[in-house]
Length: 180
View: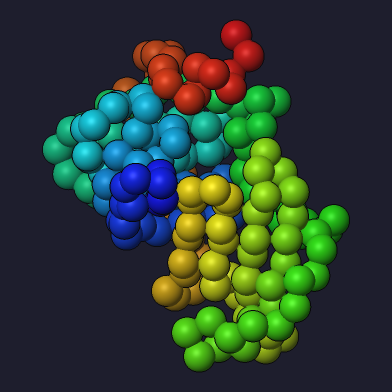
């Protein structure tokens, strides 16, 4: 994440299940994430975006970084698919412009550009498998994918912790994009 004066780096994992329309992004440190970092300003803590049933929640573990429905999580409702906070569409590149071929970390890549809330650049392998290599959501969110697995995902990864049932709404950027 690059905010002109400061650049932040963190590691994480992205889980995506098109069948259940679920997505989860875990960040070891969510301080620079536009949603996590404004819901919990300056906290510098592990943060997950969990999108299930067309709703995005932010999860902040209170005890550990493992997931599970009974984990000690602080949870808040961020926004819904109606607000633009749903899962990434499988065909999100359907209207994209092909920029060209490039080499990323020694891998031949296709570079695509898609307009959304901001300009989005996406690189995928050019080996017929079209695996993700990088997603740059300009001006400041740059995700570099260091690995990929198409193995089945344990459904518990997308379980909403019990603490989310409280219905608390997130502040910060979530409040700005959420309708109601």
